[in-house]
Length: 127
Image (cartoon, rainbow, N blue to C red; front, side, top):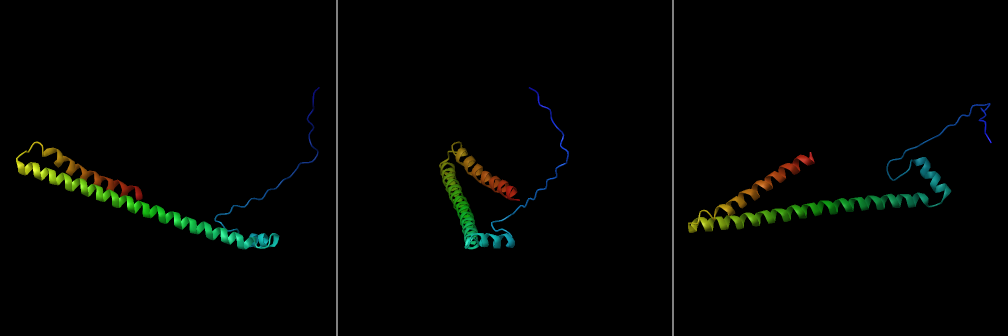
């Protein structure tokens, strides 16, 4: 059984319409149509947009506060390492043990250098 494709006598024309929206609110004309189709829909859409905005602000605030806390913790940690290394270095150097004093001295200098390199990289990534 074979089928023959028949050519249509008339050419078909089709048209399509597309609309792209950005943001939580539709254009004013559609906004009115929503309210006409379902009374109270416009108010619900506005409440949804307000809740979304409040959620976004709250999330951004949490992210910023968390970043500040992490930076502060890192600074305290680096300060502690530096002070402990400096104290150990001074103790060994004062006691006349110059070779053992090298390790705390290296740790102290390395922690300061790493902190500055981290700041430089962080500022470059933000730009």
